[in-house]
Image (spheres, rainbow, N blue to C red):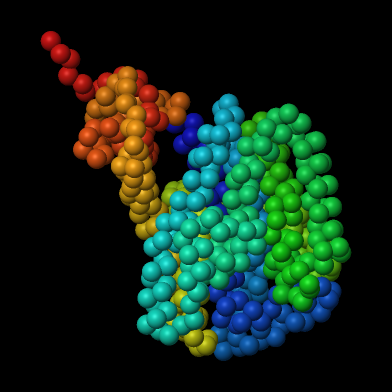
Length: 466
């Protein structure tokens, strides 16, 4: 546990990148929604794109030069989606440090860790969205689209169109889930093939696929509004982002060895980061460049953000950001939904209200994300209990449970092979004492878990029979 705390402290800058990234994505969604997507990159060249960018910036004349200046980088906030993919690959390697690869156990934990935050936000927000829509006479997702969001991944497809009808960030859930499912197999390939071979193969696959997506499938990246026969669908599949994820894994592998970009001097990281980002930035304005843009942009942007984050994330700031970083996934899921509702209900088409409400949207989304994450364990407990109760009632041949031990408060246990956990509370389901649900803690977090996931280690407070 001490090693984990040290690791989190050393990677405080990583939480800074996460927080900066999700806030920038929220600002991108808010600005795009408010202006009706007045600007998106087009394959017409660098000079023409910069010229087109001036029009929406000049429309904010009454907001002052600083507001207009800050609005320029926000138009490119979508780039942080690929930064998060790179960070996910990095964190995968760190999470597997020194652990044997249990694919089934990993997949179960990974999928539930991705789905339960989404379900929590979807189940709680859909009734609120419907109520606000009816009260404010706003266009709402149809019942089929709401059902798709509430039951994801039951109706999941690669495009995420049914989810995007409710919230644009929800449309990335199929892509997020696909990388969650691929993670253990990519980790296995990293161990078997080595970093160089895996990076080479994944880069060839990604470049080859993106070339097909642009010139054979006639598609375009997700951040471009451009009329093509298949739209952005080819770029929603994981092969379009595969090498970015693997690059994150490779950087994580060398980080654990005390080498690699994470250990570069600030000047070196910033210089290389700016160069790579500049090349990717230009590439996004040309069809040929679409093949390479999303490979270069997250590398350059991550390096630059690492330098800035390390300079800022010190002392109390690091403590605060380490605390907030744990809510960044829920913040991402909420960002477009909160921005969309606030703009439609409160801001409407008023530039003055937009400027005043923007900080409220940013901070309010953090508050809602924290509330959602605190609500999730209770909701997870209720859902798990209902499913187990239903199975118990409907099972015509109940299995007789043979216990090696009866859980009691204070027992020291191991949870999924990890020691250091203590039983804090026990609940018996259905009053027949057929099944125990235990609340356990390792001193840093507490969880409600199935008794079958626990193994008795030692009793801290059990009375000894005389």
